Length: 136
Image 1: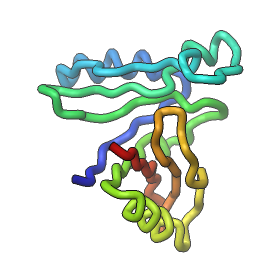
Image 2 (image 1 turned 120 degrees about the horizontal axis):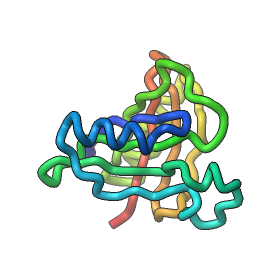
Image 3 (image 1 turned 120 degrees about the vertical axis):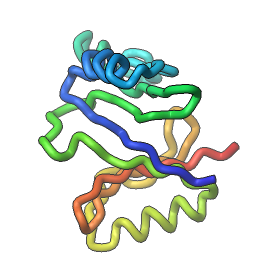
């Protein structure tokens, strides 16, 4: 079944935020990858220690995802996005196309290192979307 989940993005302090939210909501970190762990990572040591993607859950239910941005800075108000997990490639492509109308494509559809189709769009209402489809 398709679902959405909140995605929190930080300017290099994701590890601190993870520890904070873990305590606030009594969450478990079910997965955490640093940028240095990604295939073909070519950044420096500081970038390599930043969080590329982390999952926080409670009672086996995903609560939200966390990452540091790879480069640049997060603008206040852009720290939260919604990740949409599509059930089918067609649903994924339809959502991307629909959200892009009068919106801004931040990242075109691409195949990822984690085996999924992925894209990022800010819709016409200013909502940031991360779209994901992973074939079973």
